[in-house]
Amino acid sequence: MRSVFLLFLVFLACTSYSQKKKQDTLPKPKWKINGRFAFIFNQSSFSNWASGGENTVAGNINVNYDFNYKKNNVNWDTRINSGYGLSHISEKGYRKTNDRFELNSLLGIKTATNWFLSFIANFKTQYSKGFDYKKEPKLLVSELLSPAYLTFGPGMLWKKSDNLNLNIAPATARYTIVNEYFSGKFGVDKGKKTAFSLGFNLSGYYKFGVMENVEMENVLTMYADYLANVGNVDVDYQTNIRFKVNKSIKMHMTFHTIIDDNSSSKIQLKQLFGLGVNYSFHEKVTY
Image (cartoon, rainbow, N blue to C red):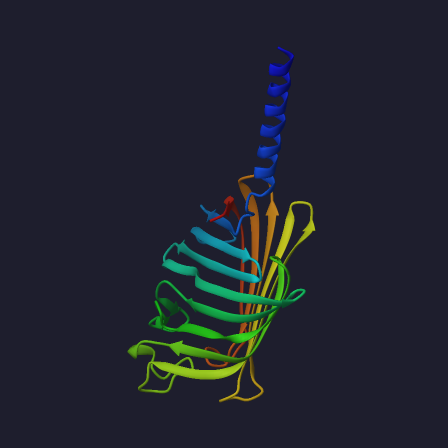
């Protein structure tokens, strides 16, 4: 009986060790996927209001994804930022308040601590037609894939974490794409549908916690064209501030600045503010 009991103890010890060893040798997740969906709704109504006002209903949807892949010396980060918003103003009808689709992809091969050989690709456009309502009749100023911007090129990446990185790409190609209607605009020569440029690209990303339940996200892109307007720098800078009320409710503020002489001679500014429903998920995948 004693022998059987000893054998049983040995069996348990071996099984426990085997399970622990198996857990220790399990591969770490290679993919991290973070998704965020936000819906913001605003409404104002007036009835016999002495100081005046117009009835307004507005809604804005934002869908963002982050895909982060890590294996050995390979690091691949892809970010999708998209948003669309409409408002309905009495007597004026529907008007677009937000329209954006942007895909950023950054592939890095580690060469030293925090440094990578990199290749960056960026594509951005809008979903629907946009109008200048200050003109009479209203003037069409953009639509799906007009304009669209495709940027890519090799460079060097400094990456401290998934929330802090800076990429320098001194030989970046950029294509500006329009349809026939917009030929001659956005830096595209009249009679053509594409424009090519080669220049210096600097892009950075920084997200951090300001205080408990408040985070700030900063996205910066700067581009200088070697082939035209030497010394002129295009700037695209966006700040997102998120205030967490609870698990599902968040307040969101966005400040967006664009300096691009090909699309406008003035500095473009956009500010969005709202309180709405927010859903986030995180997933780790290994294969």
